[in-house]
Length: 208
Image (cartoon, rainbow, N blue to C red; front, side, top):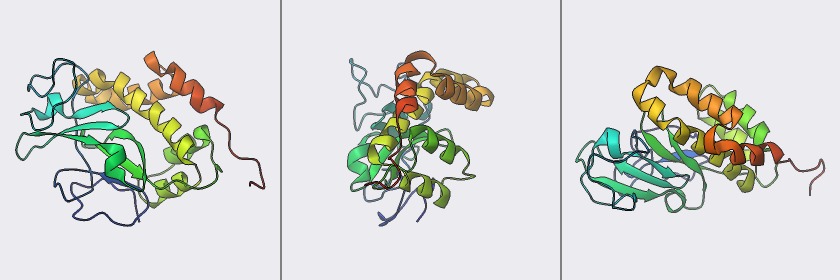
């Protein structure tokens, strides 16, 4: 099974990694988000900045990741915000992070971790960077890392994307460079997740 970005999945497949979407309440696929971390012009946030499920929304303003595990999806079909807890959506799988997709929208990325940390956080980073797509190659990378390591790298990826949110909205051509630079250099608030990832170690040979 493959960790692919899809618009809708009619059923929750007993698979390896996959992106999870709530476009249809009975489905698990890609939940979309392509907005900013700034204030919403669609009125879909409360006074505390928390997304409000069921409120009217605007795709570009309100559809985004609020943290590593909280996705606010603005449905282009009905303009209604749906707030998704990625951990709940992933079920028996592990939520790597709420991340951006190639379409500019966002999704929960559910994966199946391995039982042994063959790949440390930085090794998982390299492994995923060598995948031409997010199918079987990505699944194999995650299968060589534990849930803890996967979550460490997911936190770093989410931080980098959040740091570059405004750039990605206003200058799509410079988005990828900004995200990669923020991730590699630990820009902004990403210093700590970058250090935690760098300090992660794989299991000793012969484990357990």
